[in-house]
Image (cartoon, rainbow, N blue to C red; front, top):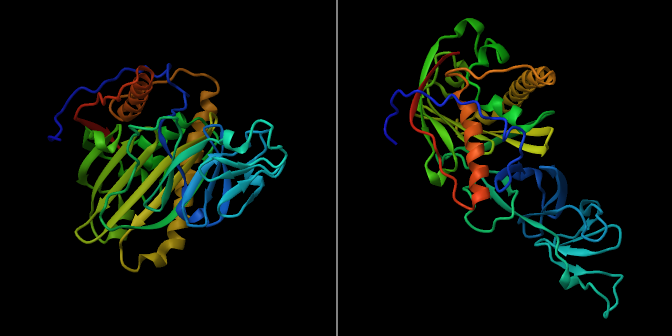
Length: 363
């Protein structure tokens, strides 16, 4: 991608037709790999669907709809022997690919037989210490699975927090560049009087990385104290955002790397789980995990409280606005969301309408 040149951004506020809509045919963050033990299953609600996530006796992760096709009982309440899940109500058994293998109550001449029944199976990909689930029916031409840069960084920790709001409101916190000095004010991170003008180049992601955009690599802001302390110097930073809800930040000095992956997963239309995964290759920094975990929890809770204050205000249906240039990325989010929904309806590959641009704001 060529160096971005100044351009008037698209300031259209057409969000009403997709506001609150949950996107399907997309990869969502399910849980960190370490949370799914061998020969075990867990229940999750994702996009309003009951999902059983498990890991078989060979260590392979799988996902099924967590309701028995017979009477709707949660399969996660039943037994799992590492090969098959058994419904606790009538003993129906299912392989990890969803195929039913036993209906104990049926005689040989009665219908249905086990071979006639399948539970819905979801596609899973395990990558970078994370498990991603495809919430859709498409079998081919799936979008790329999000991944962190291949620079030798290692999975270090995962934290998550529940936001009691629609994913659109939660996502707005991922891409808002102007709230840091107010929501995350601290001596370690940044102070209110550190606000200054910023100018960053943005470009659309290439097709093989997904539908989204990138804040091109640039020297980290002078008020990013934490990076300087952790990485031992002033890093260069690159931030990418992928539809539906994944933000990946890569900070790099001449010696060390840090990557932060933040992903929003809808539980329902009114609840969203925000995951944050951290990677680094700083020698000996693992001893700092307990401190980093506490700070990460605090950071996420600051975002949660800020978003919930916005949610509480929006309940009164007030007039709102999106301004130039600080809110341009929010506009892009809704524009790409509309494009993805249109492409799905028309049976075509989504096209990224964004162009390279230079944005300016104060933060």
